[in-house]
Amino acid sequence: MTLEDIKEWAAIGNLVMPIVLGGIILWLNKYFVPREEHGETVIQLKAALTALSERQQGQAERLNNGDARFGAIELRIAALPTSGEISDLRVGMERLAGDLRVSQEQYEGIRALFDMVRGHMAVIDDHLRRQS
Image 1 (cartoon, rainbow, N blue to C red):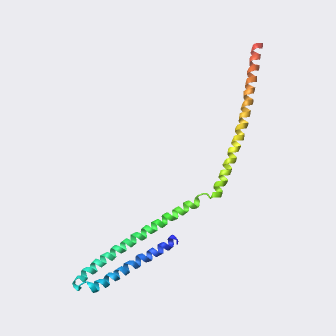
Image 2 (cartoon, helix red, strand yellow):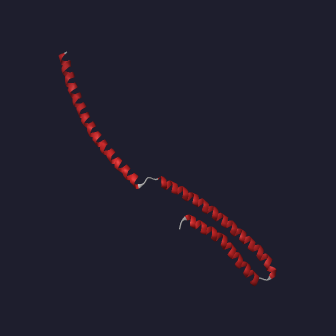
Image 3 (cartoon, rainbow, N blue to C red):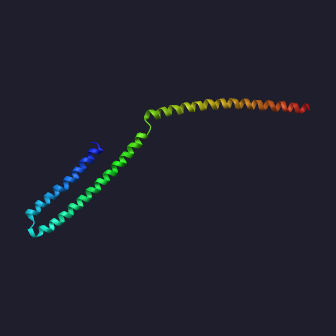
């Protein structure tokens, strides 16, 4: 049962229930209430029917608002990545981490080479200073 089905049945129930209750109350008033009090009862019944109608309209508005929010949630969920996309992203990040490790190892090797060259340059520089 979808939200639309529930919405349709709620609308039907909200329309049928006041009519059925009104009919029952009118029938009961006809047989169990003296005719003098019948006018007052009709006024009360009309007030009750008005209140039920207003309540039904409020429920319909809340249902429409809930339907709109549900639609917004559906759009957000549709925009989320799928498990396959997340898996592809995870694999790509693992590859990138591996590439970074390789690059870092290469950088360390180059750095060691530069340190050796710096050491040799210092030795050559010292040697040239002593000769001059």
